Length: 444
Image (cartoon, rainbow, N blue to C red; front, side):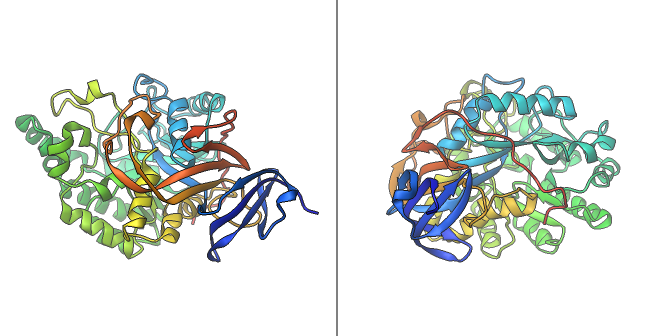
């Protein structure tokens, strides 16, 4: 008789073959059986009747601020928030202090995370004019998910603003490159709009649609010339989606729950600088374009862009107030609410936050609820009606722009390699997170 370390029993399984009730047996960290399984063969059983069982959620864009700004977030609290939100793994960004731009700093982050990691992790290295020649080797180091480019200035000092250096980065390496696409020259030219207004409602006027469209267009021209695959982060405009739809052979696309859920001007009137992020929250017409692109299959991934600051920092007068908001813990509740609202299917959600990240970035053993894959799963209660409270937020910043929002659908449990690490809003057991592993070949 086959035995299991963990048996997920009578859940509604979201698999590549469809959605239906069944059991999942996990042994030595891997799924070894799916179907109607013998509960007597299990060392531990999770009763999942009434719950949906998804392949583990992966958040491919978070900023955990360590080292250098641990007062607003650190790896321990960021990873705890991820696990509490049903997230089994994250990709963390390089704009820390010091910047993650070489092998020593990458290794330092991996060591820091491994001590108290509630879920799995990988780190980007940041592209600079000084490390272009090192990028091909850096992107292949264990625990590295790839290279990150900032075409426009945001939080931190990473910046590749000219086409010559951007081309050099694209020509050094082979893995998919993540890009923040805002045009730096236009941001500088228009900064007076923000300074003179001193009103956060002007944020989307300063960093207007043309700032994003221009940068995305420049990027795609170079992508076509170099053949390098890119992942364009947090798209906010319909015009960008049209450009990206014509470049699907080389460019994948991310949107965030913030841009799908919040809209200007209401969010600025209600939240003030708490709604400030880069690229900005835009008007409802642009938000509708994002939803159309998602329905059309142009969008490949939804990432949280978790980017916390303290409320004291956010309370500074605009534009001295920093851009960014927490989001890793609310990623899944918001998306489940949109599923229940009919905006996307559960299968589409799985592709956006699990199968898509694994496929595009070449994560080994993740992204499918199937025999042979890692036993990293997210269990959700689609009927749970919950109010998002700041007391639930694990981030050191201690707040969320979605406080007070009632959602339908909630993460019930997080399972990593056959071990339950979160159940019913509580972390359980010792931290077991470890670096993700990636295929050596190019991503899809």
